[in-house]
Amino acid sequence: MYTWKKHALLSLAAIALAGCFGDRLPKISEDEVIKSIQGEFGPYYRATNKLYGGGVKDVLVDVSGVKIGPITEMQLFYGKVAEPCWPVKADVRITVVFNAHAPSESLRGGLNDSSPGEGFCFYKDEFKDWKFKTSRF
Image (cartoon, rainbow, N blue to C red; front, top):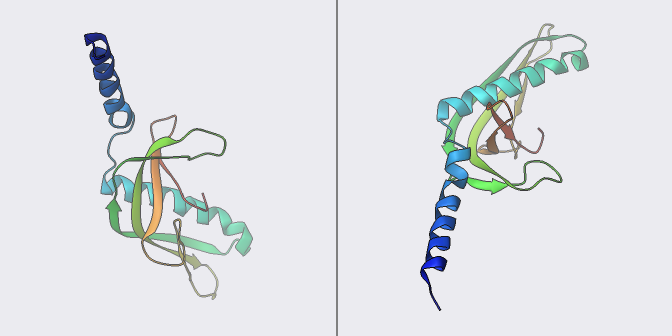
């Protein structure tokens, strides 16, 4: 039997679920994707300077072909429940430039670091800054 109480509860549930993703996680822009990727990969590879004997002069991070998919839920951290995130594909080329006569090293970043169109899952951290997960980070 269908009553007004059930209808009211279903309506409230629909309203609550409709706001789950959008209210908690605004849509990420292409500029935010690029800045976030450059802001993470640049310092990450500069920090490996000691692995190269202090010979890293610069790290260049080029991001292109950004495609933002529909919001989804993914388990971002081991042992935690799935959270909303924006799946993104982008071509990322990282070039490590050395001080010495060694050649520059070209790398890729993302979930699939062997081919273009790497995958990222963007979310907001506790400080409301955009962060992402890949297979390496």
